[in-house]
Image 1 (cartoon, helix red, strand yellow):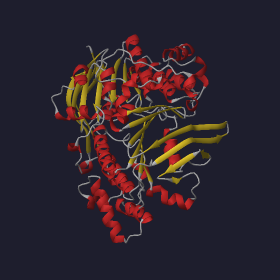
Image 2 (image 1 turned 45 degrees about the vertical axis):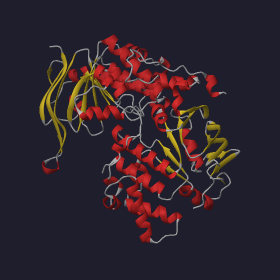
Image 3 (image 1 turned 90 degrees about the horizontal axis):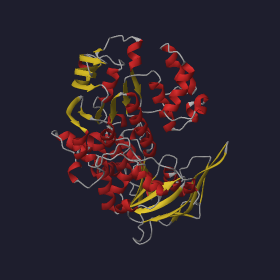
Image 4 (image 1 turned 120 degrees about the vertical axis):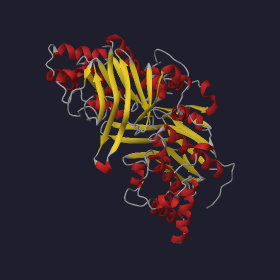
Length: 259
Length: 284
């Protein structure tokens, strides 16, 4: 078994009856161990919902999910949670404001019964490039980039195999984005991690990922590799449109009349 | 509305400073900024904390207390903003200079219908009948390419998508026919395909009406592709002024760093360049 993530015909429905909304409609893709896979699309396309389904934060209404070689259990044991970790978009919202960095990193270690906690905390700070003296600071004393480093350290301290990244740099300045993306690349290489990266930024995905799925309205319209993403060679018109919009602004009266 | 000669600058700023007294002492968000603009599209670019949004607010005298705005000169369409009293400011804001904020979800009044909000703005600045105001509001909605203005007129902000909300916002800001429009991250909350539409509408209206547009953004590439001229801000100062088409010829290491650290679709690289900040950049 060399697939880290296997998603087949995934469906996620919110609500019931006539008011129900299918956020994900029959999505299938696979990510081999050690690869980095990107999900791109606009808001509402269902890309974050897929991450939530993979981390068992929402329950699928159909389809099959296999993570790390086994079917995704309905009530996953701690051992599963340890192997799959999430990093969220906004480091201002995803860290407990009244917990020190030390406590943020220590808590998952306690929950999962890890030994040598002191050592692991210090090691994880080193790994994400945070000075050890930041250990007893609180999130509000750190900058956005430093907070995102803490969020990454919190995920990595459990030694997961798979990292689900939900727009990890879109709340950051571009100079900080470069640092965080470099850090994520280094960590993937050092730890042989599998990444599933959600982003609306095509350039970020092309930089980070081997293969990419382009999503629109709950469906994957196209799966391609980063080489094709760079050159803009697509089969689906929506991918083409998304790509063209990412090239900056140029006058095109054709896009004007909507609504 | 009084028109001014096309040669005179629409906006003159000299030695603008904005400082905030905090518990830890005086924080200077803007530290001596000077520029002038005519009927052009001017971009102000910088990272968070560089003071770019504070400049936008200072131009409208909307810096919240305890912020203090000082400067040698701050003129909009020949009128002094620094010495203006509250009454003058009422006329200035909307009449001469208007502002579009980042997210229409937070800048439109959530409990007022779109049409009513636009009419309110019109009636603040012009003595017109309700009926005429309504006609103007419809016109404004049509001008931002809303094909069914009647429907949008009766909508509450939450009933509109982000892109439609931002169109409504632009319609409202342009309905009073200001000379200068400040757009503070007007498309950051929007999806890329919608972003293109909103920018096209802004571009079209601003050039057709011969207004001046200040676009404040963190996205250097986007601003360069949209504006005529770009001011690059760092730590409360302008470090470089560039023709938008000459981005590749930027000289300042900060500007060059901003360009270099972006991942690009056009070229693959295994590592991204990171910025080595020089303390001297904020001294100059």
